[in-house]
Image (cartoon, rainbow, N blue to C red; front, top):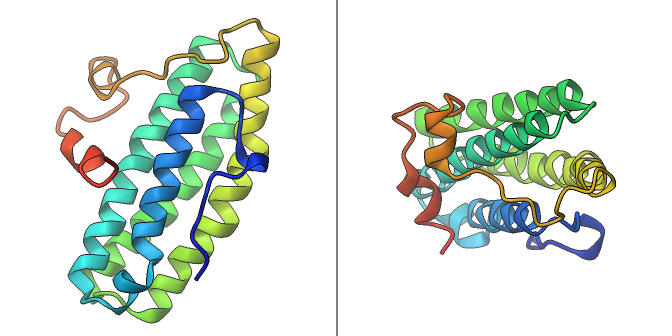
Length: 168
């Protein structure tokens, strides 16, 4: 299976957003790599749980940046996020309950390849273009997990280590 990578057509020009996307794709690779697919279900469930946590953090950070900059397409963008979070949560629950079936792994791979990459290619690039047109620094700093917790955008119980331990 081809590994996911942040290719030129996926770059937004925003350093922080591109770094987040690079991390998302790295986590996606952990989920769909052949060793995870052949491994026992608990390894797959753990990998998809890490992906889910990072998705939650990344989307909250993007949404915070959108609200802070008065992004006009915020609601549409947020709805895309909600759809993907819901889809990933279904996969996490299924992996925890049933283990890692080949069918589930293919569904996750398909969701990343088709949904997430398309979202980055169109919706996130549109956000980055808006920020640039508004004269907002193209290296806008996306908020930290602590900032998002303090603002009520992430639950206080959100585990920061669950996000970073698989990315470094």
